[in-house]
Length: 110
Image 1 (cartoon, one colour):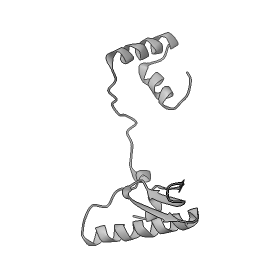
Image 2 (cartoon, rainbow, N blue to C red):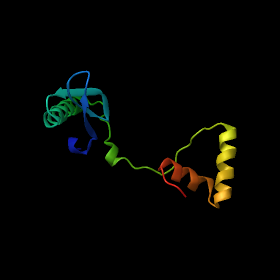
Image 3 (cartoon, one colour):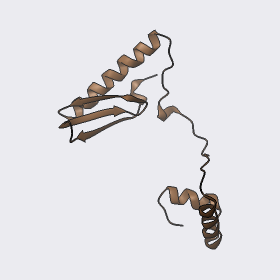
Image 4 (cartoon, rainbow, N blue to C red):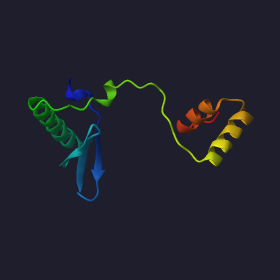
Protein backbone atom coordinates (compact mmCIF):
# COMPACT_ATOMS: atom_id res chain seq x y z
CA UNK A 1 0.00 0.00 0.00
CA UNK A 2 1.26 3.46 -0.90
CA UNK A 3 1.01 6.48 1.38
CA UNK A 4 0.04 8.34 -1.81
CA UNK A 5 -3.41 6.76 -1.56
CA UNK A 6 -4.25 8.43 1.74
CA UNK A 7 -6.40 11.57 1.96
CA UNK A 8 -4.43 14.69 2.87
CA UNK A 9 -5.65 18.22 3.53
CA UNK A 10 -3.67 21.41 4.12
CA UNK A 11 -5.27 24.52 5.59
CA UNK A 12 -4.16 27.73 7.24
CA UNK A 13 -4.25 27.73 11.03
CA UNK A 14 -4.83 31.27 12.36
CA UNK A 15 -4.19 30.03 15.91
CA UNK A 16 -0.75 28.69 14.99
CA UNK A 17 0.10 31.21 12.27
CA UNK A 18 1.16 28.34 10.01
CA UNK A 19 -0.24 25.85 7.55
CA UNK A 20 -1.46 22.62 9.09
CA UNK A 21 -1.54 19.33 7.21
CA UNK A 22 -3.69 16.39 8.29
CA UNK A 23 -4.40 12.91 6.99
CA UNK A 24 -8.04 11.81 7.25
CA UNK A 25 -7.13 8.18 7.86
CA UNK A 26 -4.86 9.17 10.79
CA UNK A 27 -6.93 11.75 12.71
CA UNK A 28 -4.50 12.03 15.62
CA UNK A 29 -1.67 13.29 13.39
CA UNK A 30 -0.99 16.82 12.12
CA UNK A 31 1.99 18.78 10.85
CA UNK A 32 2.64 22.54 11.00
CA UNK A 33 4.89 24.46 8.61
CA UNK A 34 5.28 27.94 7.13
CA UNK A 35 4.23 26.86 3.62
CA UNK A 36 1.50 24.48 2.46
CA UNK A 37 4.05 22.46 0.49
CA UNK A 38 6.27 21.96 3.53
CA UNK A 39 3.28 21.05 5.70
CA UNK A 40 2.16 18.41 3.20
CA UNK A 41 5.70 17.02 2.86
CA UNK A 42 6.06 16.80 6.64
CA UNK A 43 2.70 15.10 7.03
CA UNK A 44 3.46 12.57 4.28
CA UNK A 45 6.78 11.72 5.98
CA UNK A 46 5.03 11.32 9.34
CA UNK A 47 2.38 9.02 7.81
CA UNK A 48 5.14 6.93 6.20
CA UNK A 49 6.84 6.57 9.60
CA UNK A 50 3.60 5.59 11.34
CA UNK A 51 2.69 3.06 8.63
CA UNK A 52 6.18 1.52 8.86
CA UNK A 53 5.89 1.32 12.66
CA UNK A 54 2.45 -0.29 12.47
CA UNK A 55 3.73 -2.82 9.93
CA UNK A 56 6.80 -3.60 12.03
CA UNK A 57 4.61 -4.31 15.06
CA UNK A 58 2.07 -6.23 12.97
CA UNK A 59 -0.70 -3.80 13.92
CA UNK A 60 -3.59 -2.94 11.60
CA UNK A 61 -2.84 -0.24 9.06
CA UNK A 62 -5.78 2.02 8.14
CA UNK A 63 -7.13 1.41 4.66
CA UNK A 64 -7.02 4.50 2.43
CA UNK A 65 -10.49 5.93 1.85
CA UNK A 66 -9.73 5.99 -1.88
CA UNK A 67 -9.39 2.20 -1.85
CA UNK A 68 -12.54 1.44 0.14
CA UNK A 69 -15.58 0.15 -1.69
CA UNK A 70 -18.90 1.76 -0.94
CA UNK A 71 -22.25 0.05 -1.44
CA UNK A 72 -24.14 3.29 -1.98
CA UNK A 73 -26.37 2.52 0.98
CA UNK A 74 -26.47 3.83 4.54
CA UNK A 75 -29.19 4.21 7.13
CA UNK A 76 -30.23 7.52 8.60
CA UNK A 77 -32.56 7.84 11.56
CA UNK A 78 -34.83 10.87 11.44
CA UNK A 79 -37.84 11.98 13.46
CA UNK A 80 -41.14 10.49 12.22
CA UNK A 81 -42.54 13.93 11.37
CA UNK A 82 -39.57 14.71 9.12
CA UNK A 83 -39.96 11.29 7.50
CA UNK A 84 -43.60 12.13 6.80
CA UNK A 85 -42.70 15.56 5.35
CA UNK A 86 -40.05 14.09 3.08
CA UNK A 87 -42.35 11.29 1.90
CA UNK A 88 -45.03 13.86 1.09
CA UNK A 89 -42.53 16.06 -0.74
CA UNK A 90 -41.29 13.07 -2.78
CA UNK A 91 -44.86 12.08 -3.68
CA UNK A 92 -45.69 15.64 -4.74
CA UNK A 93 -42.60 15.71 -6.98
CA UNK A 94 -43.30 12.26 -8.40
CA UNK A 95 -40.02 10.73 -7.25
CA UNK A 96 -39.06 8.07 -4.73
CA UNK A 97 -38.12 9.08 -1.21
CA UNK A 98 -34.68 7.63 -1.91
CA UNK A 99 -34.20 9.84 -4.97
CA UNK A 100 -35.39 12.93 -3.10
CA UNK A 101 -33.05 12.26 -0.17
CA UNK A 102 -30.13 11.57 -2.50
CA UNK A 103 -30.72 14.83 -4.36
CA UNK A 104 -31.00 16.80 -1.12
CA UNK A 105 -27.77 15.29 0.23
CA UNK A 106 -26.04 16.25 -3.02
CA UNK A 107 -27.41 19.79 -2.74
CA UNK A 108 -29.43 19.43 -5.96
CA UNK A 109 -33.02 20.23 -6.83
CA UNK A 110 -35.31 17.74 -8.45
